[in-house]
Length: 373
Figure (cartoon, rainbow, N blue to C red):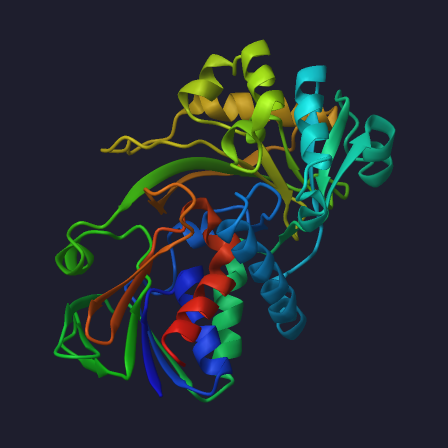
């Protein structure tokens, strides 16, 4: 079988990966020289703990297994099963963490409640002020800036993979073929469009009523911390954001403490992950109303830095980079991804939202299974 994959972000790359692993030939087209969208502008988190129960959690857990398998085969991916700590600072936040740790799905998610001393024994770099943490042992991480590049290099060794960068697909031609902006036509037995947040042009033509929205976020990267922080770190605002948390404890927390105005205005939570070079990726914000701003807002960065420093008990290293990114998110709550046949033999796969890095291996595996690869 010959598979045409359009889009070289993590979702497209994982579709190419599964096709090649199953013995098929892949032609992979990307409109940039290499992926430049949300797939390289994120935390690299394989985030299981916060996922909604049901299909979303099932997908995340399967993806976690696949990430570990792929990470063992491709060492440069930087996969590590580092787990996460959602730090809590008062009794209301602690109650939410305790409810999650005692909930019916706690074992599947790898939840456990840690006290302050246990957190510091696990992560000595966390010397700030907190009462404890909800630990998720299932969470993991990869290196987002290089993951697609490393996977592409591995795919090229198969002899069944062709990567064509700088090729924007403009048209679906007949059945199972696309024409790029150089006029070249690429024929296959299946075409999978994984175009990320690019929802205009050909995508709009093929799926004019697409149930997907675009979401903008801001993030930053520091220089090396100078010490190890293995676990990914979140603050209790993540309880408000992720669907795994709810019930009376979360309602009580929301009633007891409003978010700081800047965090509420920008839909914020703290997420912090140490990179392979020792720096910290820190974010993030969520903006849903278009048109999005073309610049970044400094107030959220100040808030994120203050929260991070309160947990570390020390100033952050100098910030080296700030950026914004945009991803595509399904409008239907709890829906992991939008997968639609838009022409005979042509499928559109989009809208995983902030779950893209986490769930992409399982999303692509499902596509491969459904299409009979």
